[in-house]
Image (cartoon, rainbow, N blue to C red; front, side, top):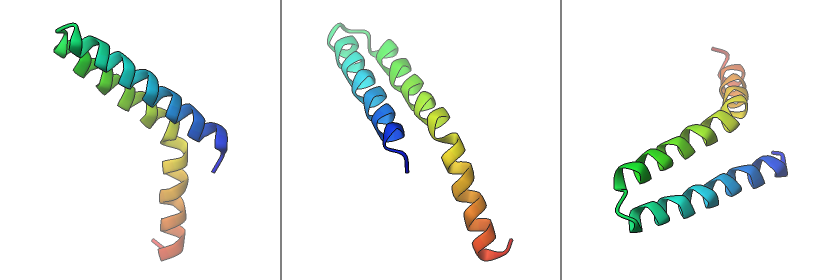
Amino acid sequence: MDVSLIIKVAGVGLLIAACTQILSRAGREEMSMLVSLTGTVIVLILLAEKIGVLFQTIRNLFGV
């Protein structure tokens, strides 16, 4: 696995966690939830190719 991908995911996670905490303390729980959902989607987009490769490897392994 590429180290830059791990750093990107960690950076997005830290940024989203900070924004979520700030919004929660400001009384904007709805926006906080939307920010964390958006962060989850961004990370899934970053990992989509790697997840596809994982599923293809599993299919090849089991001959499906």
